[in-house]
Length: 152
Image (cartoon, rainbow, N blue to C red; front, side):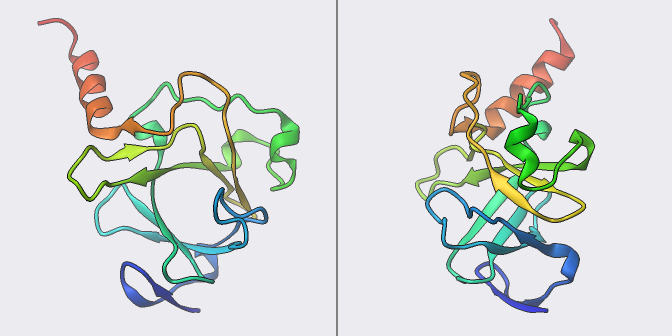
């Protein structure tokens, strides 16, 4: 399948890269069909709408910079994407890179959860006060590195 992307122009993608978000994303509820692409810089990914070239999101696994990240979800919250076990879930946070040079942040309050088997996904809203819409990725990576080193 050929998709025109915001980041790379036209690219060929496989069926395995297709993601269906039946409820869309918050603010983009009418867009349901996406593809997931590796970004040029790891550990990032692109979530590209196949319905609108202008709509693409940079994503990252929140566990890379917040090993303590957890989603306390009921089974009901994930039934509609057929997720029966946590092992079948892929979890991503949408990344914001400000044009003014400010810190790159990730939304841990509104993760995207994808069933790796069915490629169905949904965006959730977590009510845990630890998770905000703007977590400074680099600052939290530095804090984790310092914590692993321990006191001097």
